[in-house]
Image (cartoon, rainbow, N blue to C red; front, side, top):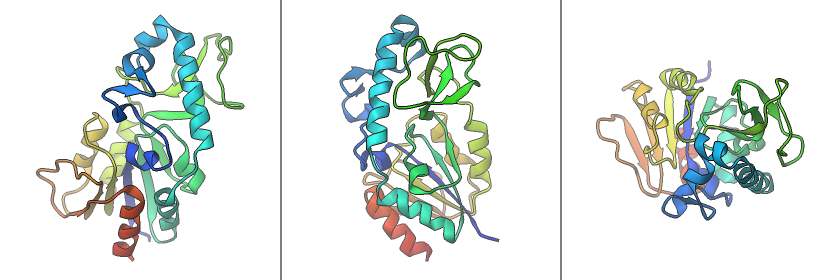
Length: 227
């Protein structure tokens, strides 16, 4: 039986593939206030703007490539039962070859009904057009969890973390809840590796190995430590 290696990834791992996040510039995301493009209220107020914004982000995701951190995590499946829980909305883990990925905040290459979030569809091409409807007749929107919305995969993610034999945290500030609370579900006795140029506050955690490096360099060191 392979040991279960649970990896929680945040924005930093995608940033090394050239994808920006709203934290890069004082609450702005590609020049937009997140309240204007990443809330249910923004969608109700100006759905065309929100749709256009995510269509552009989707094109950026599709143009980006997995980096060494993504690829090395996928390769670890040869040695471990790897389960990745990501806060990122891109598909770079999957394209790198990881086979067990849980997206906490949705995935931008899919669409969902604007009325029933459980109705999810793969996107043909790189855009959702206004007028494209779900089977019940509601406009399709990005399959992304916006600020103020429930995180439907959080309970499953907590279960995954509780099953860990080894736990790795990569480039997440532990500032966004409920995702930030997932580390509390990891058993105290489990070895924990934290990879981040700026190690986030981790008071109360035991068995912690700190790797103060970027995702790509840090995962290389992690692979050496686990081999």
